[in-house]
Amino acid sequence: MSRYVSSLCWFRRDLRSEDHAALYAALKASDRVFCAFVFDTEILDKLPTRRDRRVEFIWASIAELRRGLEALGGGLEVLCGPARSEIPRLALDLGVEAVFANHDYDPAAIARDEEVAAALAREGIAWLTRKDQVIFEKDEVLTQAGRPYTVFTPYKNAWLKKLEPFFLKGYPVGKYRARLAPARAQRTLQLADIGFEKTNLTELDLPTGMSGARNLFAGFRKRMDRYHERRDFPALKGPSYLSVHLRFGTISVREVARAAWLARSRGAEVWLNELIWRDFYHMILHHFPRVVERAFRPEFDSLTFPNDEKLFRAWCEARTGYPLVDAAMRQINQTGYMHNRLRMVTASFLVKDLLIDWRWGERYFAEHLIDFDLAANNGGWQWAASTGCDAQPYFRIFNPVTQSQKFDADGKFIRRYLPELAGCDDRHIHAPWLMTPEQQQKAGVVIGRDYPAPVVDHDVRRKRALALYQRAKRPA
Image (cartoon, rainbow, N blue to C red; front, side, top):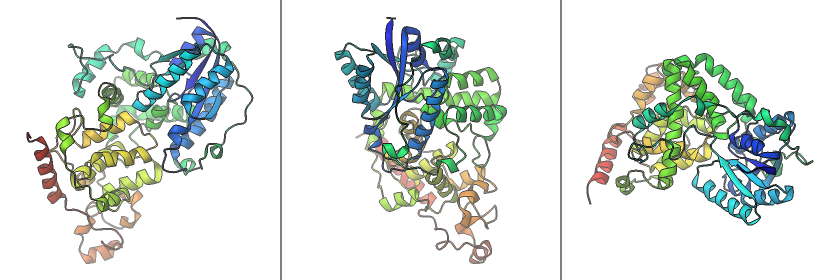
């Protein structure tokens, strides 16, 4: 690698000052390293509301990142504007010879980075990137024929076979801390300065930044061995709750994968599988970028969804009449988070009960999930819609009532988000429309007045969904 007098490290989905691939590479190759983050207005301006939990999460995490870099002797330039022009401008202002960043895999980000690289090249400034947010990327795990995997289990087996301690080693940023350059004096940007308002983020049980990630992970490690037993039950504290921290890189994927790999328990193995799914979907997005707009399985591009907008609004607004679905939708609307089991249930219900195009739901999740990640969100929705690689077979359709009975048997999760059903007994809370008028009076909820009746009949819609998919599969 070339040697540089000074360079710039551009932080994006990697908001931490430790175990950071690009920062380590910049420090190792340079006498002096500046650090920067850009609130990219080309992304922010497309958001549907000025009260976005993700923006507030990033803003709070950036404040801690700055403190972390200052503790190492450096600093952080925080800018607001189009990143494609702000980074080349900053690089020129600082007089650096190279810009380092970690890979970003979204097609729009790739296009942006290509423009940044070209602008830097015109000024004789090098553009250097590193792998950081996944364990294996792009072409690192391929079939023996040199092709990308399209089925998860063979990919997982190859992933595990390739894994060795080298791939899980952290990058010791502190070793070269003396090369960090302090930031120029600047006023700390407030949310209002970038055009956003505070949300209910501080009221939620979701700590931000590196310290928040570390505390969450420390708590999860104590219960990781039971992850496989608890992960499917939304009323239990089963998940790691690290998805948003992995999304924005406030914790290193190498650190968490290393802990799971070394634990050697059944729970740790199952959780490591979740991290492998994450790599899998990023690999799929790299090799098959068409999935952003189209079905992975081309035959399902011809699916003719009725797309009833009233039914879609009922789903968005938690008015379907199916308690587990509505409780899950209230969870995402109120908190920006949804339990993974419920993501599958609500997605299946939208596509195969309400017969709505999976892309409508994918967009809704993209707007509301604080941990939204294009690769994982697209992969999850195409799995539920049976249009993706290694997806749920189209004829396997979740029954929202039996899912509720199985995974929230005592209705604890439902009662948390649907207090109007709190008076229902454990048997009727999963299908309250089956209560007699007397039972409804006793429970304090009248169906159709206090809580909606089901907007569709699951058995009827299941048959319609099967017919719709069968027509799509039929040769033209």
